[in-house]
Image 1: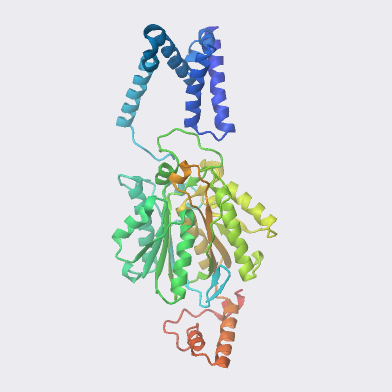
Image 2 (image 1 turned 180 degrees about the vertical axis):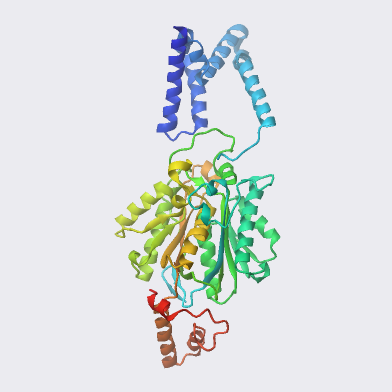
Amino acid sequence: MNFVWAFLVGGAICVIGQLLIDLTKLTPARILVTYVVAGVVLSALGWYDPLAEFAGAGATVPLIGFGHLLAQGVMDSVAESGLLGALTGGFTAAAGGVTASLTAGFLAALLGQSRDQN
Amino acid sequence: MQKKGDTIRFAQPPGIVSYAAVGGKKEAEGPLADAFDLLVTDSRCGEKTWEKAESDFARYGLETALKKARLQPDALDAVFAGDLQCQCTASAYTMRGFDVPYLGLYGACSTMAEGLALASCLVAGGMMRHAAAMSSSHFCAAERQFRTPLDYGGKRTPTAQWTVTGAGCAIVSPDGGPPYVRGVTFGRVRDYEITDINNMGAAMAPAACETILRYFEDTSEAPEAFDAIYTGDLGLVGSKLLLQLLEQAGLPLQNHKDCGLIVYDRETQNVQAGGSGAGCSAAVLCCHVLPALRAGQLKRVLFLSTGALMSQTTFLQGESIPGIAHLVELSATLPEQNEKAARQTDAAAQAAGSPKRQKHAAGRPGAAAEPGPRPQKQPGKEGAAQ
């Protein structure tokens, strides 16, 4: 049942993104940024945590989950080490994801080549 | 030469001696593949960058046109050329290899008609013997300059158009032809506040409408007198819009065709709203329109190239996209009424005794003083001309 809910919730989040691409003039880059910021806001309001509990990876893997992770990191860090945590918490929590994407980007640039889109 | 409004019509229409079109891989898969003079399926042309590849496409175009006209480069009095790259570099870098006067034009996708019109004016005015008009574009160079990097995985919107990878080149001379350049109308900038860089057909349609209306107003011609009225690269969206605008203006067109819809098969080639780019109208003109005029399959056509005149900077600053369209009137035969008009001018000049007019009249085709006579037309052909 966990898998079903993860699939449905994750799928629904992606459907919203697809509709934004198809029905609005928002560029993909703007939609990505909107998703991250929405994740931060929803998480700060305390609304995203229950969804993440319920749907697991279905809610944490899409980009909104990254915003959620940043917000949670900041909140945890502020609770632990005071206001300075607002500056360090986000990236501490997201270190794994950020480093993985940097490494993947570097490898892709090293191995790949810009090509015609035919 | 006669100027009325924005339209210039030539008493002695210059001819197009030769023309050449070069295309890339996508063009080679399209419906016009057989018509191109040269197809290069390696989009890089063996070069390191797309920009260099585009210069190669332009060079192939100019070289092929020269070869077909049996001319050496030094026979050219000028090359009018342009492309979409920043500061027009594809053309300028091409011209490093030709020791010929070069005039760089930036009219975006309207460059081919702009160059052909300017070349025709200077040739018709007797200032030049041979002048070339050339224009090129490259999908990869244009995409990353104006939109997003090629590696970026964004989805293309349905109104987006596919930049043609290719070039077209035409050489104009007083002795050439058919086809003949009968007249030109230089366009005016029109801006209908379109800000979507993926909907340039809509940005250019009002400019095309403006130029078409001005041409018909200036010349008192009727659209039915033409086999076809070609626009450069309005695509599906812009073409619909143009027809709507013209209908509102009281000039419904039945014979409109768009080069952007001819160069690719929209059903199978995944090009969204059609082809675009400075090379689009140039290549279609040189591999489709001009050969049909030379073969007599088309008698008279209007050819417009349409350009969207934004830069990547103005786009990012949220500015709207101004459009422009230049028009060239082409025909397969020399017009009978031209001869008539010349005779009238002749008679008027003799009556007035003006030496200037007599001199002008002496230069018309068939006059004894004509130094380089143009090829004699068959009398029957002359009679059939408009």
